[in-house]
Image 1: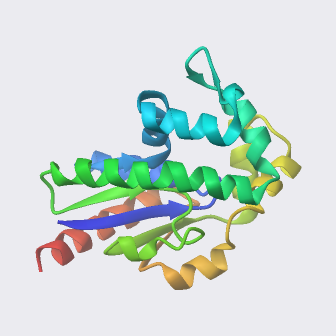
Image 2: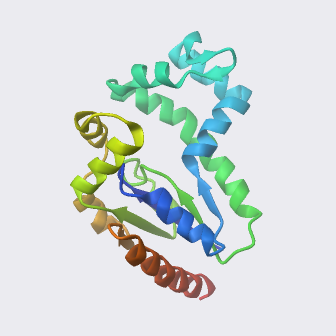
Length: 196
């Protein structure tokens, strides 16, 4: 079974693309969702996060996301330490999940493949992109935040131009119909590549 990474900058529409693959019967692992679940359910992770960020990281046994975001947003070193705790746990969980799937290939949807230098963990990486203005508009509408806040978040991600050279496949997600067709083509190709 091949392991495919699906990535893209904020507002690129990678979740939309992930859903299109799921509609074709491809097992998709959403790293964000699973990381949050693990941060709630794993006693070991909880202890490590509290040791790193303090008791306020959890409120009544629930992850205090706004507190954590505030702590790590302007502290790259602390963010790296937090990722160093969470990412290996997610990776282990993903591999166990992938192991029980019955499909030619599985997809791990995750935001920072190239930023974290983990592209070698995948047989192929699909990059979802969209023009900057489109991405800005999507995130402002989705999250109800200002354009500047979106740009600040984008500042923590690698530029699309750099990522295009590193990915095996690229989907420009501006028009849903075109994107859907591209996903269909890519699916057929990945099934072929997985069986060879």
